[in-house]
Length: 76
Image (cartoon, rainbow, N blue to C red; front, side):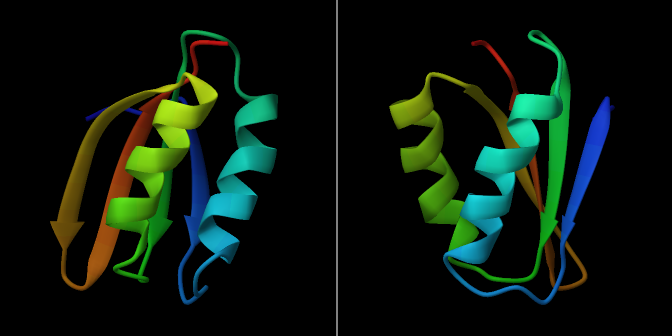
């Protein structure tokens, strides 16, 4: 999937990937896609709740070689 912005949270543990995502999404234009790269498995559950709470769209969660790639479309 193509992303307009990327946030590297490699090696960060919960709750830092969510905190950094919340900060970075403000820099992403409405309608654009943010890709978050993380190694903490907890992001798979946490990002679903975060998107539901913030009103942003979770497009996909993909795993590749120990990394979790999350794609979020900013809606607000």
